[in-house]
Structure formats: structure tokens, C-alpha cells
Length: 307
Image (cartoon, rainbow, N blue to C red; front, top):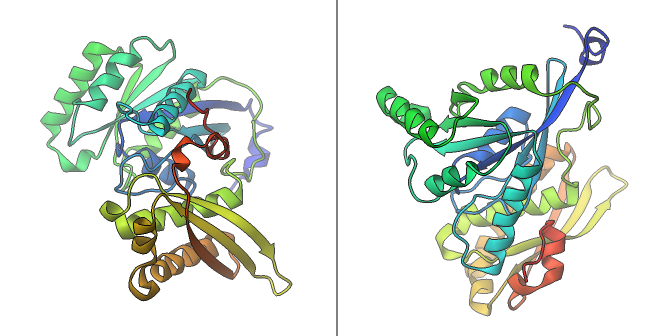
């Protein structure tokens, strides 16, 4: 097998940024993780799980593709909502190509339809990705594709399953031919620009959401407070789960601490797999009133604080 570094001498390299936009739970994070081949963005059934821009880096043929996973775009109700939606559109406007993901089951309704209409104002190459194609009939897919292209003249349409990987190779092949020639933005072995401390906090937040889902309100937050590499090759990580009320703290802790223990075990196992070293994870739960109105929290998330 020819090494990628050797290939670079054979022909010019290409590189570019591709923004993934869509309604909440369209499958953007699942797609990003599949394309990268590793966990770089957390996945949950809870809507608006992705809060800030997450970049996943893929090398395909001679091309370095930087995918930008954006927060789901929806009608904002809170300050944090507005910051997330602004961040998503900012990522779209800065990208070389925009991928618009549509859930084939839900189709062009609600948020998806609103995004489609807004895309008419964005002057960037746009590609339509119909996701979850294994869940609907072929004729419904064709109808959905035709309806979307009536509003926006997409440069290309791909039918995919982000979960199963169907159609994803075709997407990479297309990008490898269409992104502009130029040097790579990141080292060859880098798969994300997300600091490991932040990824660790995101992994714990994913386990928190997956365990509690409907029980835990949207405005919970995880921060990595300490990261200590130990002499025995293990790492000690201390994280704080912030909630807004004492009643929410009790939910996270669970009866006799069973809930937080389960969250910790799940997060520790995945972190050990990612880091390829033993992990000692310690979780603490604190109440922080109205953290969603604290400008410092927004800066930590990479978001602009809305006025």
C-alpha cells in the first residue's frame, strides 16, 4: 500500500473546508464521525447536542477535507440557542462547500424547510445529502430530492446512510476532485482541532444525555478541571457537571449515587479507548444558576455571547 506522504509528490494536493448544516438530529455528528473514522463529535438523541463548531479532518487521495460539524439550526428561544444558530451559519459562510443534510424520514418540514429557504441567500457551492435512506422507499427519496432542488439549485445530490456508511465513499470521491488545489491545513495524523480536555468533557456530556435524556434539562454543562498524566502511564481527569438547580443535581447523582456512577463508568471506558491508556475519572456535580447567561461559559464553548 502506498503511503499518503509518498502520494503527495505524485500530484498536487487539495484542501478545503466543508460545513455540515441541517436541522437538529439530521445526522451531522454521526456522519462526521463515520467520515473521520473516529469519535470527534458527540452523538445523542437529545436535540441540539452539538453546541459549537467541531472540525473533523479527513485525508482522501491527495485531498485534506476539513469537515465542520455545526449546531443544528432551529428557531432560537434562548440566548444559548441564538449563539448556536449564529455559529452554525457562520461556519456555513466561511466554508468552501456547504453540505445540507436532510433526514429522509422527516423530509423538508419545519426547521429543514426554513434552512433550505435561507440557503438561497448563501453564495457558496451547495450539496444536498439525503440521510437515513434505508428508512424510506426509493420513490420518496426521488420526490424529496426534486422538491429540495426546486428551491436551491444544488451542485450535487448524494443519498447516504451516515450510520451504516452507505454512499459516504462517493461523497469523499467527489470532494477529492472538486476542492481547490493547495497545501494541507493540518498535520497528516491530526483528525480534529478539538483539544483533548474539551473532547473529554464532551464525551461525559454525551453519556450524561444518553443516561438521563428527558429527565435532564437542556442547560447542563461539563468542564474538565484537572488533567494529570501519572508516572504509571495512566491519566487522572477531574470534571465538573454544572446544572442550574438542586433538584437537577439530585437527578444527576441518582439514588445512592448510582446514576453518576454509571455515567462515570461509561465515560471512563470510552476515554480509555480514545487515549489508549488507563483513565481515572472523577465527576463532581455543582449548581450554577443561569450559566446560560454567563459570557465566560460562551467563550469556553467557542461561541459569541449574544447581546
